[in-house]
Length: 146
Image (cartoon, rainbow, N blue to C red; front, side, top):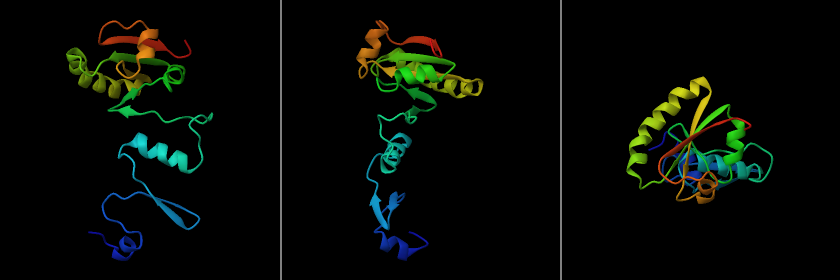
């Protein structure tokens, strides 16, 4: 139910929340994922910010933990004064036990400009190979620009 049925009808709003992008009197419906990363990347695309440009790119976060990929790994290390990275596999029981603790630590450490991140070694094998990750979880800390 909406407080403005005319607006709902005009833009064919069927559910909530509805995300529309308006430009030059026309609108485009958003049909992507309902997480920050997806929405912000969609918006960047609409305003012409290319993923390969020098503009700062968006980083997926998971409960305060930075999600690292081949595309953002180096940049995120350089960007943060101190970055702790958990190399993990989703099926790993020890990794699953660590997850809530890692998330809570990330939230508390962010106030001190220390950030925590994670690399899914089942998806980002090249990064894990580069750092010779042999067991899960493996945790390394990187000082920015090093």
